[in-house]
Image (cartoon, rainbow, N blue to C red):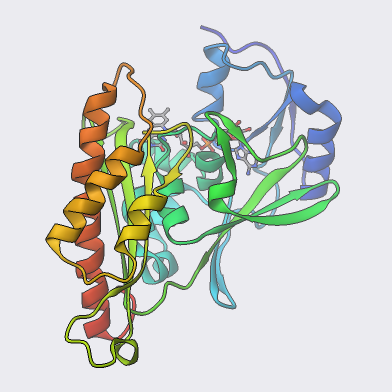
Length: 307
Ligand SMILES: Cc1cc2nc3c(=O)[nH]c(=O)nc-3n(C[C@H](O)[C@H](O)[C@H](O)COP(=O)(O)OP(=O)(O)OC[C@H]3O[C@@H](n4cnc5c(N)ncnc54)[C@H](O)[C@@H]3O)c2cc1C
């Protein structure tokens, strides 16, 4: 399988890259790490007469703190994200999720932006970013826009990006005190194996002053997002709704897990059947909720989100 010939562009600025993207339209693809795109071209899933490399654009791979947000540049490699002290401090579960991706070779080559922009349903970074209420900053010839990460995904391999638009950075708000998160996934092998199903959860417990005279502390907010079991990463609205306002318990988490499994829209493919995936969602959701709640309680004892 050969990659068809293409013209290789190396723009030095974002504006130049967007201009090229818009001029060549469907004929062009942005090239980040190439770990997905080059395979897709070989398999003739796409054609691209023009390849626009993002490698020479300065500052597109920065990871920094600004205001109340962690900012991760789209060209930060997955290995850089996993090793970053600021990511570990602000949202450590993202590091755990990223470390499930591929192998160290893939993570060194592939930036996090490609994990979003490929819009593959089993990608590992999007569900946990959605659970953490991430925003995506997008730029194009006509200007910039920011949208919640869950609105970025339209269908398998289709995102909200318009011709000439590119993802610049992922903005993750500082996680609330009394919160904890977890990412659980199942794959057929350890290492270089795509998720058959995955679940990201974040739980915020109510604050001491919100507890009033009640003995038990309740869940102020819960976010549960499924991966690899729907055309796009799937926030489980019914499951999230039944968790909010309840005291955390194993019984509650079992009920929530069953609800999440009912909300999943899995397909049968080479990696697993629809029924198998639904069962996985139930097990993984229970584990994710239990771990997220334990971490939220630990964060409360430590006086802040887990580090
Ligand atoms: C052996 C192997 C194992 C893998 N295992 C996993 C895994 O376990 N989990 C997982 O989630 N993924 C896995 N992947 C998929 C892939 O490595 C990741 O999704 C990776 O993050 C893609 O990033 P990239 O920079 O290489 O993307 P590229 O291939 O460069 O690009 C992917 C798509 O996104 C577009 N794009 C990239 N960056 C931008 C941007 N900033 N703005 C606009 N468009 C952009 C490209 O045009 C292209 O359409 C694996 C891949 C391989 C080859």
